[in-house]
Length: 306
Image 1 (cartoon, rainbow, N blue to C red):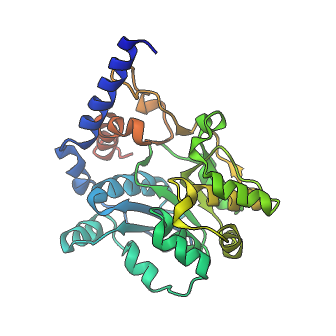
Image 2: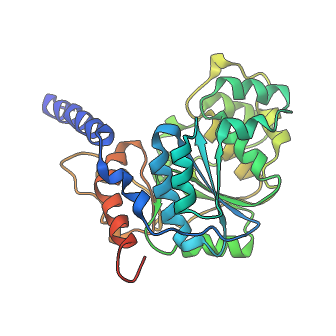
């Protein structure tokens, strides 16, 4: 890479960071969206957000629920403290839906095997895995990170829900060539158990059928695990092994998109009108705020609805 290219990429990282983190009044626009009642249903749409990204969780949930209200009921989890006003805002926007603090939810399920308990106490994303393991014991669910947005009817996902497909997952095409998003220790431990993972799985969007995740297998995978071998992708790698074990199917890549297009300020972004679902991973998160939110807001207030 030339000195000019290096300088340009450094500038891109600075611009992206500023665009991703700067205050945007638009992010609160979701509070004025038309309410969507969460209809009674045994299966769930589960969205997880951090406390400081509560409105992002609302955007994601609203974008999904307008298409899935007849198939799933909403349960939004917040990794942190839920303020009283946030609860009121949520109840107005999503009547009859559930809102839970992740830590409080997990505290009601305290009996865990020792290896997983150690993992839960020492890995940043282990609470998400614990949440999914608990939920799937009693219901099937569509799990969505709060930076995953639906722009039009997700037909393949609806078909998976209606057919009772065992499991389905979002594909990250770049992961086929870049294995840095795989936890090496978990991968090697899986090989010792004669298991493999799904190398191109993206943990931001998952369809999980009831009883499909083997918590006993998780305990085996974590035998010998210590914080010394911790990595950012341990939780996703465990999920990849669990999904491979029950022959999960990939969602169509063209419609359930993980793409870095638009990462750099000199690149054009993907047009929202051409998208069905997109996971706005970290390197394009700023495009979610700049382009996707205005597009969904226009859908929300269109005369004939979304």
